[in-house]
Image (cartoon, rainbow, N blue to C red; front, top):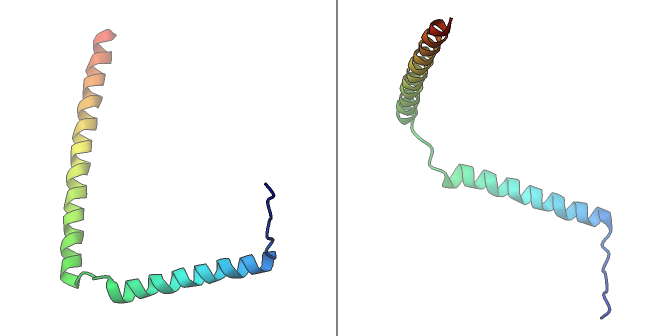
Length: 81
C-alpha cells in the first residue's frame, strides 16, 4: 500500500486556524447578546444575598468544628502531660 501525503504550506494552516478562532469569537458574541437570558437587577441582588448568607453559615460551621477539634486536642494533650 502506497501512502501519499499532501503537504499544506504552514501559512495556510495558520490562516485556517485564525479563521476558526475568529468564527468562534463571532458565534460566542452572538450567543451572549441574542440567546442568553440575563437576570434582572433584583434577581441578581437576591442571588448575591443568598450566596452571602450561605457563605457566612458555612464559615460559622467550619469555625465551630475547628474550635471543637482544637479544644478536644488541647484537653487530650493536657491529659498526657
